[in-house]
Length: 386
Image (cartoon, rainbow, N blue to C red; front, side, top):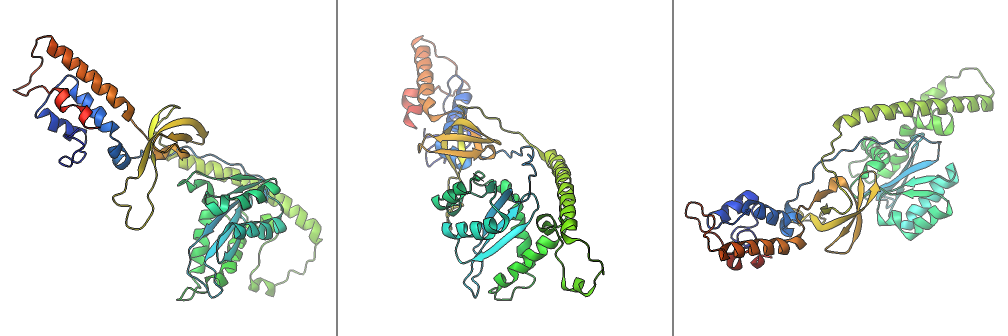
C-alpha cells in the first residue's frame, strides 16, 4: 500500500495515512479499513508498539525457616583486582536475610556450583529452594544436576523482571556502597574489603526482621573490637541461653517479617495498574529489548506476532511466535495486543473489493464527497501493498 508502506510516507500513523488517502480516494468504511491496515502492519508493530505499564499486586513468598530458601546472583563485570577477581557471587537467605559472598575471577557454571557446595551447603546445610536468574551459567546442566542431587527446587524469574531476586539485588547495592568507602583509587583491591562489607551487613539490624541476620542465623550478635573492652562478669549457661534466645528471635522475626510484608504490600498495591488483560488465543507483540553497542536506537524492539498459548502464572503468559516458531514466557507488561493479524488482511481486502465491484455493477455512481473520486481497489487497493 503506497500510501502507508512506501518511502514517500514512511509508515505514518492512522490519522495521517487516512488523510493522505482521503485526499484522492473514498470507499465505504474507509476509516476503519485504514485503521485495521495500519494496526496490522508488522513493521509498525515491531517498532512503534508501546507497552502499557502494568503493576500487579505484591505477592508474598512466605517466611520459612533459616536456610530453606536462598536467592543467588552474580554481580560484575568489576575492575580486575590484584588477585584476578572480577565478579562477586552472592546469596541471601530469605528467612534471616543472612548474606554469603565470594569474589571470583569468572562466573562459569563450575564456579557457581563450587560456591553453592562450599559456601552454602557445607556450612548451612542443603536448601529447599534456590532462586536464580536466567543466566546460562545459573541454569545449565551442571547447576541443574547439583540442584537435583540436593533434592531442591530451582526457581527462575522471567527475563527482564528481576523482582523475584530483589533481596539479593538490594544486597549488591548495599555492599557496593560499603566497599566504595574503602577501595583504593585504582579500585584493584575491592575484594579485600568485600568480607568486611558482608560482616557489617550481617551484623546490622534489619528493618524487616528487627534483628541482625547473624542473630537469626547464628544465634548471636556480631561484635566490634571496642565491645571486647567491657565484660559483664556474668557467665550464664551458654547453650541453654543460646537455644532460648534463638527460638525467641526466630519466632519474633517471623512475626516481624509477616507484618513487614503486609506493610510493603499495602503501600505497593496503591500503585497497582491493570491496563491490559489477555486471554488464551490473543495475538500479541512481544517485547525483546535489543542488545549491542550502537544498534539500540533504531532497532525494532518488538517481535511477533505471537499467539498466547497458556497462562504461566504470576501475570506471565506462554506465547508462541508465528514468525520464528519459538515458545517464550513473558510478563504481561511486555505484551501488546496485535489488533489485526496480518493473515486477515487478504480477507479484508477481498471483501472491500467485492463490495465495490457489486456497487459499481449496480449502475450507480455511489457516494462522492466534494469532487473526490472513489478508488477502484483493483488499481490502488491493499493487494498491491502487502
